[in-house]
Amino acid sequence: MALLLDFAVIPSERFGVVVLTNAGDAFDMTLSIMSLLLGEAEVVERIVPNNLPSASAVEGNFVMGRSMQADRNLLSGFTNAFPAMLNTVTAVDDNTIIFNSFIFGEATYQQTAPYVFEIVSHEGHDILSLGMHTLRFEMENGYPVRIHIGMGMDFIYVSEVDAIAFALFAVFGAISIGFLIIASIVTLIIFLMNRKKEDEITPFRKYSRYFIYAASALAIHVSVMVIRYFSGFLGGSLSRVGTAPHIWINYILAIATVALFAFAMIHRRKERKTLKRKSKVFFAFAWNLWLLLLFVMFELNFFILI
Image 1 (cartoon, rainbow, N blue to C red):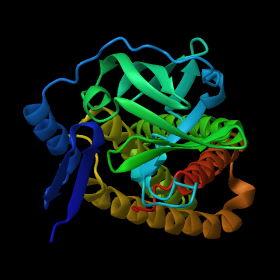
Image 2: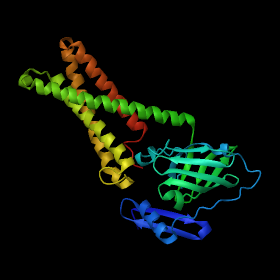
Image 3: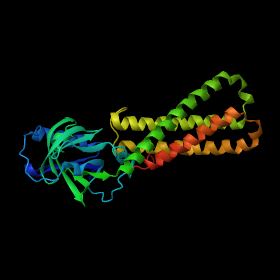
Image 4: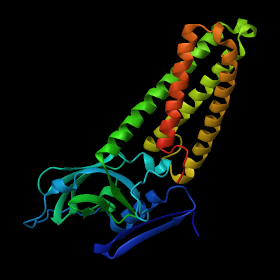
């Protein structure tokens, strides 16, 4: 029994590695064992057969996911969401492609059989030479559906519409996070400048201030999740095990913001006539961008682990 399992199979070497672990990241362990047992994969120039299909047929965006997941909607949890639009295949000529991944790096592949590409060179993670030296494209009606790589995961094709949608979600999320953090700083400065008049501040303003602080905390926490996922900040890259506490914190902060928003709205009705226009506009922006952030979080599965 183990918490996580990773495996790699290399048919040409009649060799496989299976790692069972109760730690958070079996993937790097698998690669390390493969590197020790096999060494660096030898890259040789191959003779390209004639009459191969054009490499441009396999171009596109691909989402990283586990082979056993049959459906194409692999954005089923936070740990699957972010690699979605960050793996692209681009044809250089009729038989050569470049695989580019924000996480793994870049590699050049040459077609050696119909829709089968062998690695020629790479810059980036060892997985490119050890576990992804061969890309086998599964095609349907002349279009790529899946890339089989034999590392216990596949890359599944994502349409241009989904790629654009993901990019828009990322932009909207960044705008919301930026505004909420700035709003909390402005709110804190105003509070410090008027702390002697704290007794005169209305309940609406108090709850709105607490709401902005909580929404800003949520925005900062989302930023930490993204930064940690990509860079290994604060203790290494996120696995499913490491993501679980973050998911619970998202729930806690989201519920807190909803409660504070509700209290602010209750008192807003009582104080509608006394509110200044600037305050109305400021809080309206904060509320709407908070709702936008929650929408993006739901769409990109910041509340779902697996």
